[in-house]
Image (cartoon, rainbow, N blue to C red; front, side, top):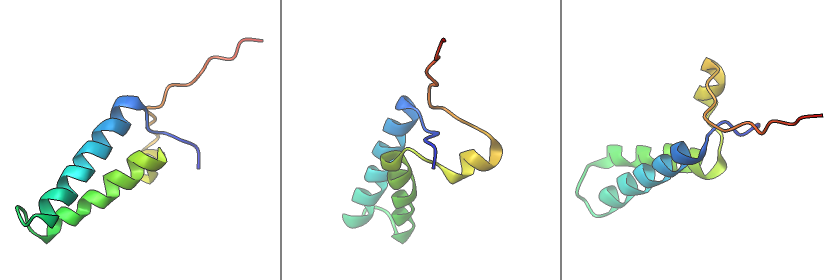
Length: 66
């Protein structure tokens, strides 16, 4: 798995995922809030399978000059 999630994208996924889980645990929102596990894990791992399917990459590529 090659990382395809960049800095800001990663932070947003972690924050939104954690927020959804916290709201679900506290009973503020319904059971659907457990979907927050998906962006949380993707943000922590740095890889999104959907991005691979559509060819998107928000991770910066380091230029290697030879």
